[in-house]
Image (cartoon, rainbow, N blue to C red; front, top):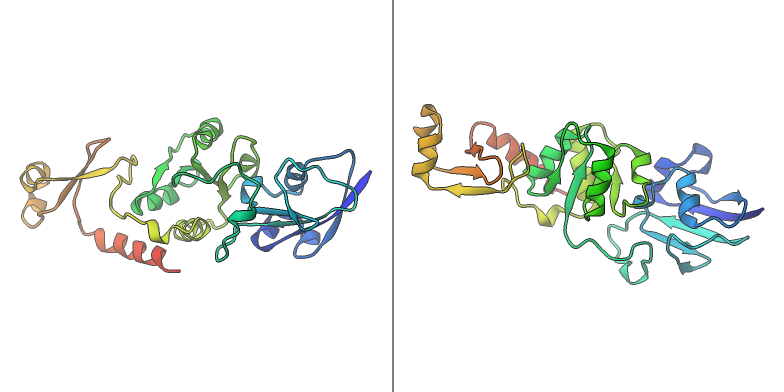
Amino acid sequence: MGSAWLRFYAELNDFLSPEFRGRPFVYEYVGQPTVKDVIEALGVPHVEVELIIVDGESVDFSYRLQDGDRVAVYPMFESLDVSPVLKVRAEPLRRIAFAVDAHLGKLARLLRLLGFDTVHRPDISDAELVALAKEGRILLTRDRELLKHRAVTHGYWVRSTKALEQAQEVVRRFDLAGRFAPFTRCLRCNGLLRRLPPEEGKRRAPPKVRIWCTEYFECSSCGRLFWPGTHYPKLATWVRMLREP
C-alpha cells in the first residue's frame, strides 16, 4: 500500500466529498494506479482537469503514483496562459463545436443563437455523444459519469439548472465571448443560415410579415424561413448578456 498527498483547486472541489474540499489530504492506494484513475475515483471527471503537478513537475494522465507524491490538480486557467507546461492532452481543440446531452435542449439553442456548431436531439444517446466527442466535439452534460469515458477528451459538467446561467458557464469556461457569430445558425436544427433576396423571402413569408419586413434568412439544412420578428429584441438582449464578462 502507498499514499500520496492530493490537493484540488477552484471549481474541481465541486466534485469532491466535503471532507476533501479546499485542503490537502492523504490518499491511500494499492498497487500503482494512474493519476487519472485516482482523480476519477474521487469523483472528478478528467475533462475538467487542465494541469496536474506532481512534486513540482507537470505530468499527464498516465503518470503512476509513487509513495509520498504530492499532487496538485487544477482546472482551466482563465487569466493565465499555462500552455507551455500542459501535458494532460495530446493536442488542443482545432475548432469550437459542441455535443449536448438530451436534457440540455435550452442550452443547445442558446449556443446555436451565439453561432456555435451544436449537436443536440431530445433522444440523443450516451453512445452517440461519446462518438461525437471522439470526432473532436466538446461534450456538455450534467452526467458526471459520462465525462469519465476514456474517449472523451474535452468536456464540461454543467453546474446550473437554468439555461441562461448554463450558457454563461460555457462561455466563461471556454473563453468564447470574442467568438460569437449571433443569428447565423438555425435554433432548431443547427444548420447555417443564408440571406435570401427580399423578393424570395416576401413570397414565402406570412402576409402580415411581408408588409414591413425586408430581411429574410433560410436554413441551409432544414429550409426553415427566418426574419427579425417580435422575439428578436429578447434574443439580442440574451446575446449581449452572454457577451458580458
